[in-house]
Length: 92
Image (cartoon, rainbow, N blue to C red; front, side, top):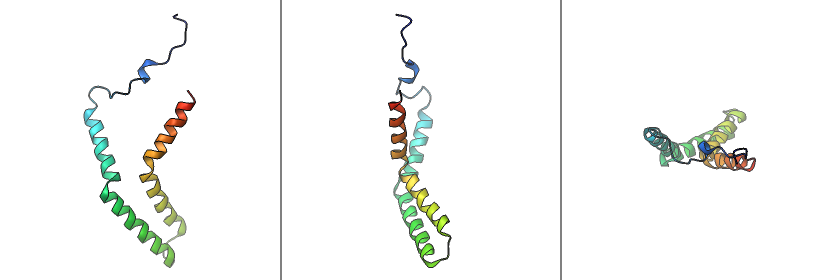
């Protein structure tokens, strides 16, 4: 029985470690700030301004595409991480 391969039990715990309440709440606050209403309004204004500057030829298309791609990554971060986690779990 001792020779059977067993999964690592330390990685099975989904609870937060002791004393991490402050860090978890700070990360939740940061997530709410980055994905909240204010951030959405700022991102919409940024995309509109960059799009206008790209159409009038006042900004490089590569820089404009970088700003727009950054907004997609910021607001799609939860989906990106979920996809990476599901892919990592398939390999186990």
